Length: 430
Image (tube, rainbow, N blue to C red; front, side):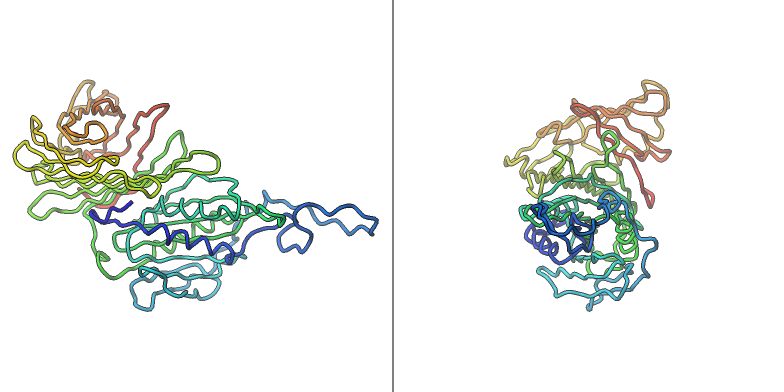
């Protein structure tokens, strides 16, 4: 999915697939006879009258999955030759830069204190984390068999959201071995970082190493020094299982008002062995009065962009639509009863809304998933017990706002259950 029009651009799928070639060189796979064993692999040999060899110690794969480094290796400073990227990484020795890849992608490899190396890729542009992580995970097939797809996890390193994904695999042929590929990604407007570790176990150690590196990263170049007025990260989950995150960046609009960019990255499980990636982006431009001047909605699933829709205010209570929505070309206009607005512009009204049952805040918004060619009335109604019911068309959600009128969490009802968005990080004021 490409979202370059509002500050994001995906890594190409070919870049992702090329990373799979590392699996043969990363090490860290484990034979069924035990790590480091030179014994027979695959099916046991036929019985013979030969003198029996001493039995090997039982192989405990489950124990290997739980192993961690007792202490992290020392931090090593790493920097690209051109100075565009630098940071500190836990490494047993000085990291080694590889030959530059396509499109300005740089990579380095470093011993991690385990058998397998830590391999990292530095992108000069943003990437779509969910698509990239899932695409790489899937490239271990057909040479290997993907056995288990682990749900993603999300954290914040410094001020940056990070996403982790891991998959278990084993061999298909006579040679019997198994492994775990662990992946991690972060993406910013100034560039992105992707790391992988191909070895059973060491999940917490890998996450600690990646978060430490991300928190220390410094970048130069376009957008490197740009800081938003406000940054918020929401964890997305369903029935207690993490699916991904939403990052919201608020900047000041020239001439007054605000620009709000929201990036949502999710990996939704489809079976024990796979899932689908969803990377969405929304932009809302508001004037100083809170009137919606422009909005862009981009939706992609598993790397394929299905929607790229723009709405613009053409005059008082007049809006034009253009672009693509789920593959259909759209070019139309409509005239709502009043100018459109957005939740972020209603902070004052939400903050002042009495905490008593039935108190309401109403306004018109544009929500293409509810009504593509018309405005949608949004209604916030207090339940008198600290929560608010949000209604928009046939959509209903339970919301909690803080004392500033900023959303803390939202639980959206969907077919067969609900999806939860919960704030886990914030910096800056509105």
